[in-house]
Image (cartoon, rainbow, N blue to C red; front, side):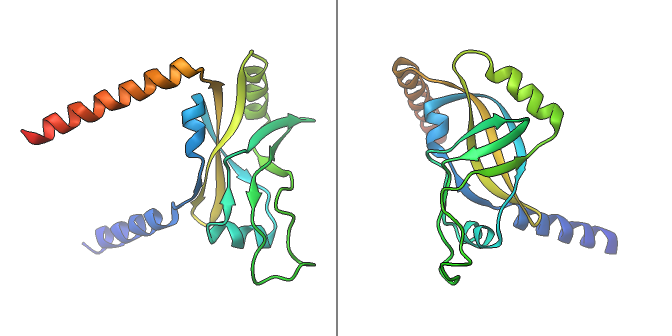
Length: 165
């Protein structure tokens, strides 16, 4: 009996630590996500504090592979309010993503295909670590976006019809 209580308590605490800190909702609208990968991110102390306060913007972000390393570009993390200018970070600096060599090689081979890009999907806590989910995406055309919207609308109508009965 005691073991189950401790087990339930641990699982509930684990749920608290898997928090979504920033989300790139536009990415799933603009791209068809083919594959996702969860990576670590190399951050400064003031960046961690700003991200935990919800001051990150992934909207214009993208990832590049340079010299066998994965880099996150154009992600805005606001400067921390309680740190001076000297100790604060640059909001749009290039950040290194932490992934295995095999994963990076696999991503590079996928990116060589025409029309694919690496897009950051979200920033989240996993335990006490901040992780970034990145996706290999293929850009959608206007007619693809319209078709997706029609499908979503049809799903909403079916769900509403089922909930009435």
